[in-house]
Amino acid sequence: MSETSSAYKLLMKVALRMRLAAVGRSFYLAFLILCIAFGVTLLAVRLTGLTPGFLTPTNGTWLAFAAVPVLAGLVAVLLHRHPTLPDAARLVDRSTGAKDLYLTLSLIETSAGEYQSLVVKSAEARAASVSPERVLPFTWQKRFWHAVWLPALIGIGVIGIPQLDPFGKVAKANLVGKRHERLAEAKRATELRLEEVRRKVEEHEEHNATDDAVEELKLAFSKMLPTKRDENLKTLMSEQKDIGKLWRQLSAERLKEMLSESTMGDQQFGANEDEKLEKWMQELQQGNAGGVQKEMQDIKQALQKLAQTKDPVKRSELMQQLKERLQNLEKMAEKKLHNEELASALERALQQLELAEQNDLSQEALEAAMESLELSQAEMKELEQTLQDLKELEQALKTIQQAKKVNEKEQLDGEKTAECKSLEDYEALYAKILAESGEGDPSEKDGPGMGAPGFGKGGEAPEDDSIETDFKKEQSKSAVVAGKMLMSMQQKGEAEKGEVVRDYKTLVQTVKQGAMEALNTEQIPPGYHESIKSYFDSLEKKKEANAPK
Image (cartoon, rainbow, N blue to C red; front, side, top):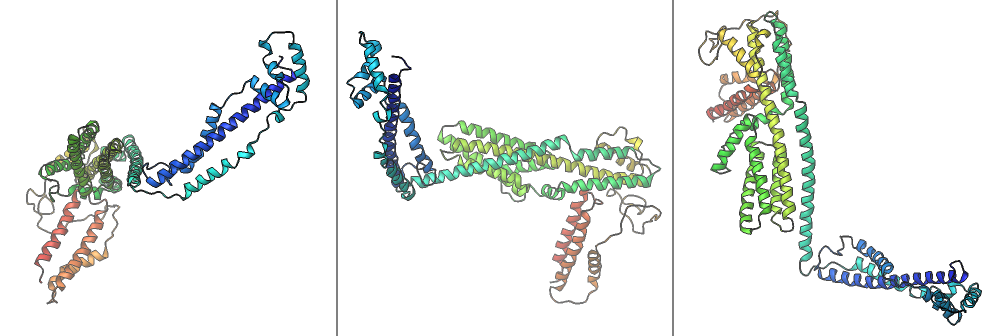
């Protein structure tokens, strides 16, 4: 039978329609079966709550229901019955009453006999009047509504069936879900902050403004000439102003107060922990965070060991030890270092370690805790860099003060600094010059006053008004007035009870405020701030204790 013959084309069209009908029937049956299965499952899940997180009102049930027709279509394509050419021939014979004419035609290549040509001619003659649509009409309309009302009923069930929880499974699953969400949010926050801190540390290593300022100061020292005292002073004042400004930009006052606090005052860490804390704080005062960094690295290794530990007893002991170590670090960061970023990172690591006690979050929470510790190390690295910069800037300001004294004696010579490499070298050089000129440590001996170091005997210091400087005559009027009033308070007569103490405290506070304003200028190096503050604090306590009641 030729593939171009009308009879063959008729059989092929009928076979195609038979296949489409088979696919349609398979899809219809699969869709109804899957809808019924989905409806039963939905009803069981909503009423029992035994499978939390599946087909609940908030987890995309509609998306799961949308997968039903897709799955039914896949089943229909893969599992439908594939019609053959003889099947199509039988259907044509039955429809036209041809008494196996087309069946014989479909099998003619496998049969023998001289009648083949007669069969082909007869089939070709009939084929022109046979319509494939009449042979196999599609009658899907009869069952169409079954594929409409059933999914519509299930849709109403998706909306209207409440989620019951008779066994408490749903509540437990919701709690676990919230923990996962909180853990994921903490990890995102850790990653963002870690990226930011790493960028700051890298930028600091590539370009450090403190190093630039110190190198510029060294260059200025090397250009000093003994005969140009006024020019030297102007240069030193300019350098002092720039370095003081940079010092304030690093929040120097806050960090200095942080590191000047007593490390053993509150006894809240235990004896051994207090000793360790004191050692760490002493290291930090020198700009070295090695002890704290080592502690954090040890905790990270302990976390890795915890992740591999299967014995519940050992795991519990190790978990408790890690909690205590993290709590001590977090307390130190908050109460001693006053570093909110570091304290936040350590607190987050502690919370994630506590979440690791949950079986469903154990591995994920431990990984998040290690990331938080990595952030804590980066925060400490940034703090260490800041402390080192502050120490160097304070050293620079003190060296400038010494250089000013040397300049007053007209001995500030840049040629003498050829062998100086560090600020300590410059400081030692200027101290040696001052010692050779008779000006040593003023506290070591009594001086005659106005001319030699030591405790002076009073008098009026000479001034040279011909020297021009950048000094601006500015005073806090409130502080001056308050100072005069303090001096005159002893001359007052009898006062009402408590009036002296009250007035005195108010005036001392005013004078103290004026002095604190002076600390913010570059004229007072950071090394002298604590002594000034201590003086006012002791003055308030002493006068308050001795004041009349």
